Image (tube, rainbow, N blue to C red):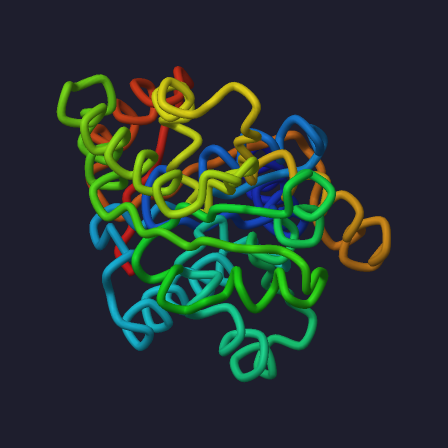
Length: 288
């Protein structure tokens, strides 16, 4: 009996010691669109998803609050073994990433935190023939001008419209994406974009929640217009990052395991994930 308990305890300790998943953080459910693409691209890796659903949405919150909330989440993921964390949230990437990278990582020299905005802006010029692009995002992402700043680094010839869609995330978070109200607000924002610039041929979904309503968005967008979701782009970018940084790749554990954390009731989170993505998951409730 004692021998069995010893080996059982040793196995647990060995697993914890060698468990270093890639952390994926979002204010709610949107980051799941990135997580699913990461799993497809890196199926051997372990992933730990954290949704701060209890404090969502982040889009209209101040820079200070978003930074504080995001740092809470990043430190939580670090404490659970993550050496690499992806901010699968445009608002967090826009309002918190730079501060975390430039200030807080000094306390974690062997850890890294990456965002989702830069990978999208690096490739956008090649997707637009007219060089007229629209970014649909939260109020926080738009007000940060992060997309404008990053796109200008790679192309000075792009005409970029930024437009906030404040109703979209609440509709998604509350499971109302098939309602008449959702379609009304989706059509309203899309019509506004083409009223501002009818040469737009590429729309960046600058919020990781928005791919969850891509089918609804497509109903109101001309067929020739590209709709760019960030998940596949971020997944390709992360795979390249790990190839360029073999030490970080080695530090990330590879058991094909995916775990989920939420700051709301786990049953609610599990049910909503099933409705939004069709995935059956089991999450753990935590407090940040």
